Image (cartoon, helix red, strand yellow):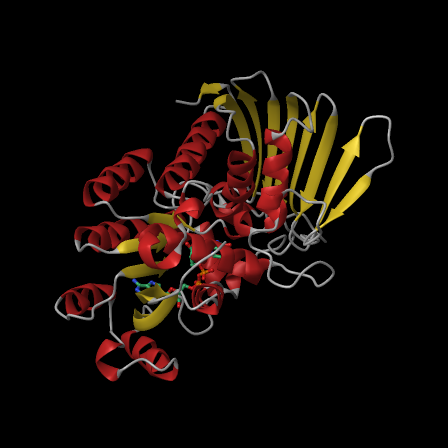
Length: 387
Ligand code: NAD
C-alpha cells in the first residue's frame, strides 16, 4: 500500500493494560508503521495500575487517565486531543465505550465482538455514519497477505463455482477449567462479561470474517447451530459449537468454534472448495496457501512471491522466505484503518477503493451471526433464517 505518512493519528487506548492478552498486539500494530502515535490511555480497570502503566509507556502524566470517561472528556478539551481510540477491554464494555467515543467525534478500533446484540450494533452503525467516523474491528489475520491472494483467486474464477466452505477456530487451551486460576478466561465464561456466547463470539467470528472477506459475493441465507459446555461449570455459555450455514448461491459451510480441541495450538483454518479447485489456509502456517486443482498435484503458494496476484503483494514488507504472521497482519489492518480515517495523509487515492478491512458492518455481521447461532442452538439446533 503506498502511503504518505505525514502526520500520525493521535491515538488513545482503553484497556489492554499490563498483562492483558491483546493490548501489546494493538500497540505493536498501531505503532509499527508510524501511522498512529500513542498519546493517551486508560489502560486498566484498576485506575492506579492503569496510570502507572501509561507513564511506563511514555505518556505525559496528564494523559495517563484513571478511566475512559475522564480520558474522552479530557482529550476533547485539548487542541491536540486524540483523534482515534482503540478498545481492548472485556466484551461487556465495548458498546458503551464505542458509543461515547463516537459521540465525541473519535474514530474507533474496537475488539470483537463489537457488542452483545444486533440492535446495539445497528445503533453504532447509524451513529458512526451520521458522524462520518470509522469503526474498525480487529479480526487480525484478515490483514494477512495470503487472505488477499485467496480473495483474488476466488474473484478471478480460479476455483470455479464455490460449493463448500470449511471454517474452524478450534484450540485446546481451555479443555479444562483453567478459569479457576486465570482471570482472562474467567470473564470469558461469564455471560455478564462475555455476552450471549463464549467460543462463537470469541473465536468463531474470526474465520467467519475471513470467509466474508474472501467470499464477499456470497451471503448467508440460513444457519443451524449446536453448542455444548464440556466443562459443565461454563453453562449456559458454550466451550464448543458447530454451525452449518447455507449461502444464497447454494454453497454450504460449517464452522467449528472450540476452546476444548485438546492438543490444538490455535486451529484457525479456512478451506474453500470450488467446482474446479480448492484452497486452504491455516493461521499456524500463515505464509502458505494450499491450492489443489482437481486431477493435478497440490501446490503451495508462498507469501511474497512474484507469482501471486498483485493484491497479495501490496503489503509485502520483507519479500518471500521470511515468515510474516500475526503482528504484520495486524499492522496491515491498522494501516488500512488509518488510510480510511485520514485518507489525505495515509493513503494514495487509488488505495482507498480497494481497502478491505473489518469495519462496522463486519462488526455488525459478527454480532448477527452469534445472535442467530445462539437462537438456533437454544431452540434445539433448528434452521433459522439469517436476516
Ligand atoms: P484481558 O482480561 O487479558 O485484559 C483486559 C484488559 O482490560 C485488562 O488490562 C483490564 O484491566 C482492562 N480493563 C477492563 N475493564 C476496563 C475498563 N472499564 N477500562 C479500562 N480498562 C479496562 O482480556 P483480553 O484477552 O486482552 O481481551 C480484551 C478484548 O480483546 C476482549 O473483547 C477479547 O474478546 C478481545 N480479544 C481479541 C483478540 C483478537 O484476536 N482480536 C484476541 C484476544 C482478545
